[in-house]
Image 1: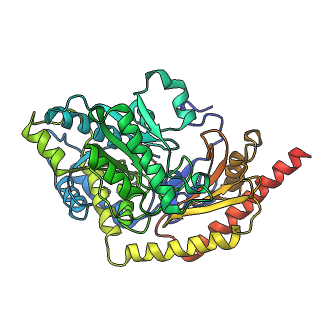
Image 2: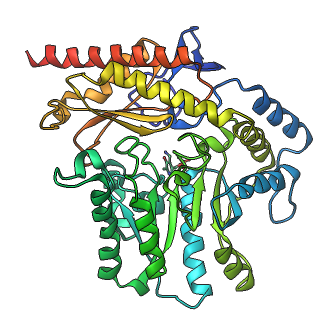
Image 3: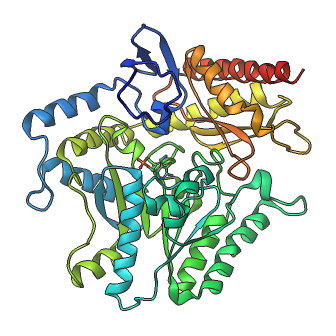
Length: 448
Ligand code: PMP
């Protein structure tokens, strides 16, 4: 009996002992092919990347940690330079934290402090989107919209107004083009700002490409341009959360590059040190930095481990790799293979309603009926069955419920390490197909 309060206490977890490229190996020697980058879209360089491992070993042997209010360090300064050099326009400063939740939380704290510093103290409210995830601190749970996560804490969550996501498969009307749909849902932001009173709103928060909640939902063309216009019109800061979809995952360094806009805050984590160390970051606009530094002088956030030297050293090695010649081009090639593999295998599948995503971040949305897009009944537990079936055949796969509205629907997110070989992607598609079909046949047996 384990003494650990595990995240999923009733799961019989295998003991992971070693990583080998695209594989995780358990204590019994069973190998698991990784279709979900470490089980959370983290391990973008796989599980045995030499440069990242050596960077950690070197730094920990020199200086593992020193507090950021008393010293800076070489890896911290180098990482800051790397991230700001090719950041979206205007994001000239970066604040380091330890996780995605802390990156979102810190950005919102900076937004709040910024408006005090510039004499707009009534701006306190946040608008975000339904079907989103922004972390597991109380503030980030409140900004996000995952029903199961929110439920026990609802009464102590911050008051956030949630508008519609940009979820074309379920939201676009037959009479609309993708662009018209995007405009309609983006315009909900303007209505929300007006209903709250523009002088009370400080920030709008969105994942550029939604990660887990409804599974890899990319925005339609023009959606974020419209969002940016509306934020600018009402002086609202735009926070794009790329903790999940950022840093090469979508085929460009930042996902929002493909939408032609720059936010005021960009949050990063998972792919930053690719799991070789925990680290997150909040990139921020010059005007926010200047207002705080020339105002009260100090940001009132920050953590003991912000800018941890060893974590920064790992991130430097990972970020240099992502920026090395041909790396992102290769990711784009792999992404095309992954998409066509999924389309070939599942395009005609009677229970796959939508195949969507951007780059190496893809999703299959499962439905009982393709015509009506009706999801499977929740009590079928389809996603849990797919997860079990995948793990038993040695595939790390992420199948989740609540796709449609936080309760109904099932989807599988496919976001393998970016170092995959074409054969790995083929094997992932094959094993995923077997896992889904086994889960579906279990449901049919149960029904008869
Ligand atoms: N934002 C997004 C978009 C995420 O996907 C996640 C993690 N899944 C977070 C924030 C929170 O990151 P962490 O778990 O590192 O706190």
